[in-house]
Amino acid sequence: MERHARRHPDAEIGPTSPNPVERLTLALPALRHLEARQSASIDWDKVTGRLGTDLPGDFRAFADRFGAVVIDDFVRLTPPGPEDCEQFLRDVRSGLEILGDWSRRDMSRGYAAYPRAGGLLPWGDSLEGDMFFWDTSPGDPERWPTVIATRSDVWSVFEGGMCDFLTEWLNGDPLEMWGLPPIHPVVEPA
Image 1: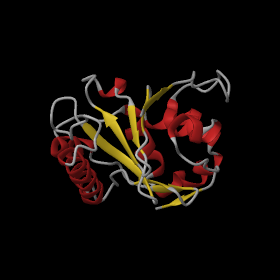
Image 2: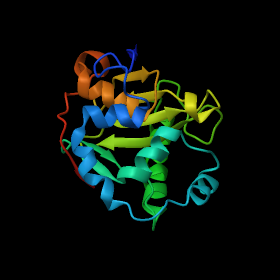
Image 3: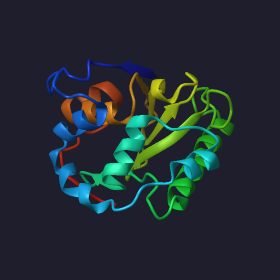
Image 4: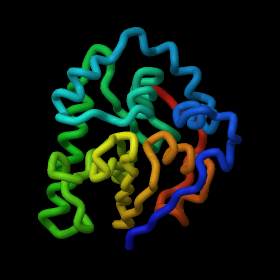
């Protein structure tokens, strides 16, 4: 079963939140304590050159401000870091291999792995085996929706990017929307 969900991103936290990263920071205030960890800039030209595509602005802004984090001992985000993008690229390759395996077993609900046209590109996972992808079919990275593949084989589409998805997860009913457990606004460096 595939589910689709999207609420207005300001529904829970107010219209004064100007962008997805700020909205997420309002839903997850502990992120502010991690801002000082980033001391240098990420070489986005190198990262996107190696991937062969640009990445959404909210993901880049999140990575530049907060780096790799684990939310509530459950959600793992490992964007590239200022000194090393290799771990991020290894995580992407691993996610693509998993999706490719699912596809060969006819378990990917018809989704293909990036770099195939419209393929899924992983951006995070849970420590329990759930995976989070961008659907690259809308070409423009700013329009890539989030595809959720849960360990219990529930596939869902959220018509928004990483930060809005995480904000909605923190504020909403994730079990009903995506087959995911609730997460609490607790975060630590990964």
